[in-house]
Length: 330
Ligand code: 8YV
Image (cartoon, rainbow, N blue to C red; front, side, top):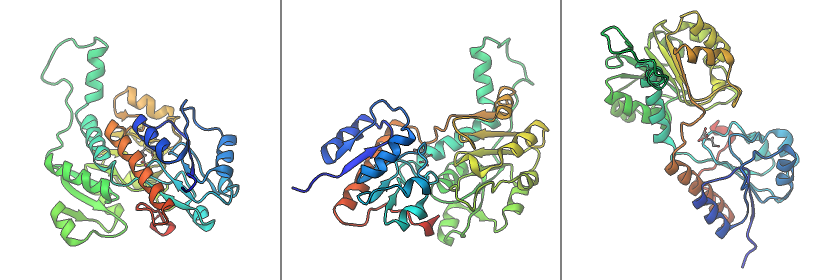
């Protein structure tokens, strides 16, 4: 039988995924879940047939330049591939895959949860009780903002954006979106979504703005200081995509100045470091922060692992893997 491919996995994955990988591949697993050192990553590039990185591994041009001839596939455990220099990889004949689809619903759920958490002061209320600060109910206490009847502007209407649209519609929000390409009219109608060709014009009219686009050179600081200033002062911003898409310092400044009502953030520009100004705002309750857990469900992680395995197997069998990422897609 054929020699099994050497598959190096950078982080600890769910046990069911690791078991399956051991059966199918010559799997080199990271059982301690200590993030892989740069030296170990270089070593992996030089020896592995397949590398399975995660969001925490920066597979940049310099690292790809050190790849051995045998490295043919980088099968990302994750949907976003901004951790990988896809163009450099493809130029060297290395195929790149990701794990789309299986984390759509979980991430959309978390986005909806952040919208509700910010608008209805959920984190603040929970903290007040657990810190034993609840002195009793009163009519004017802990008032948040109603979301029913408000406008949601979705920046990036891919799978997650559309899944969010369906959820938000059930909560009575009207759906607006900006995307590189306008959706097919049938999909747009089914979602009852209004397309805005101009992101600027959409931002100026929304009560809630959600970031759901990938992080690429074109979307870095897409929500710049100038664009954030277009938002209504009573609007809230949520981001479950990538921190780099929002100018975090500008966002902090505006929240501090009361030029924006609140923010719900699952992702940050320099993870795991979080801008201290955002943390201070979170303590003052205008911001809800979460540690990049949008797709973090038991089911989702197992499905992501299964996707990685199918991509590797298909590729090793000589076929195009289902979730190939091409530079032209980014
Ligand atoms: C993970 C994600 O946290 O898939 C993504 O893009 O951000 C999350 O699912 C991470 O990327 C796993 O590598």
